[in-house]
Amino acid sequence: MSNTPFLPASINTTTYQGRTYFQNLPPNLVNRVYFDPNTTNLVFQGQFVDDQIGEKYLFLNVLLGADLAAVQGLCNSSDADYSKWILAVANLATPLYAFHENPFIPGSYVADASQTVTDYSADLVAVTSSEQQVDSYALSATGRAGLHQLHRRQLHQSRPCGEPVSIYIARVAPPLYSDN
Amino acid sequence: MAKHNLAAIRGQSSALVLYQQSIATDNVLSTANQSVTLFDPTVSKKSSLPAKD
Image (cartoon, rainbow over all chains, first blue to last red; front, side, top):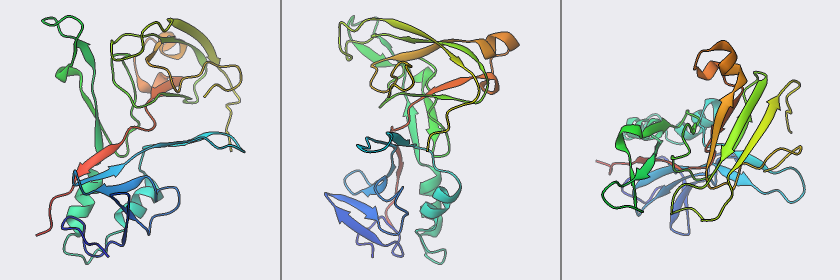
């Protein structure tokens, strides 16, 4: 049972390396949803699985359907803190910051608040600018056919210098690869 | 990861989709017309939990 002053009492938890995990979650979520007592944040993260035998794959940072129900269902609906838990799950979000060079301090970069986008648990964290700070990149076909042009480059001093600029042109055409 | 002779996206320091024929052909800038989506699949989403009453 919970032993923190933040988690609802009806949620079963396990503490490991300073984080509080939820033992009743299904295997695809049990290591990706946790409570951090230091920040008092509920955290949900995506995961790249570097499978040594099969294909490498991703657990996306998108919470929908059965996965969302599983996280919400951790807390008993009769728990006094049930509504707080549901609200906390609904508020899972990440800000996507875009940076530009500080005109007053050349060589330093600051976040442009006017371009900050907030993505919630059900949202795909779409990257629309190469100035946006990301944890990692992925590219997925949506189902529409056509050509696309991908540009990769090195912009910020916070990123490794000397990387070449590359442009790739690819065609999306059926049948789309469905993976396992 | 690179698959089927395509460029690897994961691990790049910066990336941007410059052009999509599916958008240009329809002349409407809409996510519904995209043929590909560039996204961040692993960044953490967080929510602050208030202390219990």
